[in-house]
Amino acid sequence: MDEDAQLRDKLRKIEALFARAGTDGEREAAGAALGRIRERLARAQRADRIIEIKFTFPDGWARRLFVALCRRYGLHPYRYKRQRRTTVMLRAPETFVATILWPEFQELNRALTEYLAAATERIIREEVHRDTAEAEEIDDPPRVT
Image (cartoon, rainbow, N blue to C red):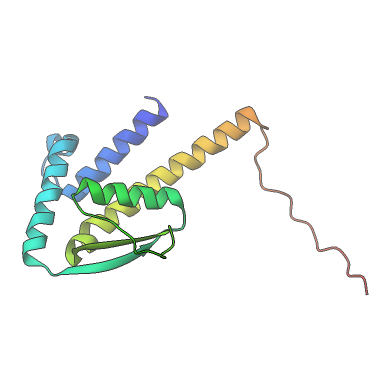
């Protein structure tokens, strides 16, 4: 299985985990998992209070992943004028964000970050230079007084 296929499989398993699938067969059915998560969101929207939450992301990749995950569940991420591009606002049920959306985002982000780091390392090693170790750390130069 190539690296892209392995990543896609891992992402499906993460989604199934947060859908709380009951059987192995259900865990493999990504479409069913998405439906279960959307149903949990609908129940939370009826039973829980909707809050506005501000998220700040360290990089564009994490922000894009979070926005896509919100849209997947039918949520509407936004930002106010003059807010930084690293900021995403969201109105959603508090329990859904705390128990499903944010933990799932963290797992997906961790998997994608590992994949991107490995791919970057491999490409640099193969196309630029095989030694990708950090720069050597040396003592500070002597001070001139």
